[in-house]
Image 1 (cartoon, rainbow, N blue to C red):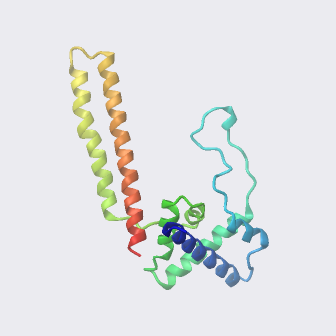
Image 2: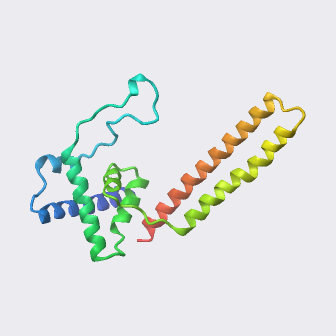
Image 3: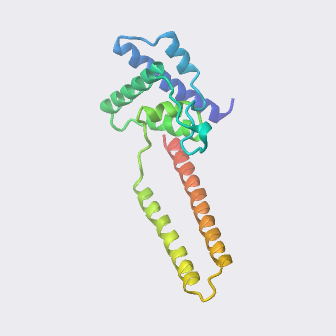
Length: 189
């Protein structure tokens, strides 16, 4: 078993244990259906993707899953109880970081429970900086093409391609930053 897999197993066991404890504390232990669901969380949503187009992807009414809702509520209560007892408790954020970076289905449960990685003050500045890069790079190009005597369709097409390439690079950079921050969160525990 790899180190990453053992870490996933550890955090998943922690989350499951805390949910079971919270269920017992509430006076209603997990039912067999809820325990089965907790052990076999879905790896993909049954809901259609909101950005999909076409008549086959219209909104589908899905019945409520009360077992999943209860598990989310128990996880949320356990998380808030742990925060109330120890506001600097990092186990839940660590679990969220490990499951997110490894794309484990329990991350959805943690998201629904309200477990979030603490935002760093640097993130806001990085966001402003990336927006500023887009403006600083694209504004002169747009002005150059617009004020040019020969503003042809080819120049506009090249401008659009440059814009899309810049946005793609920023998206790639942001994903790497998020992955690096998750790795730091995991390693700082």
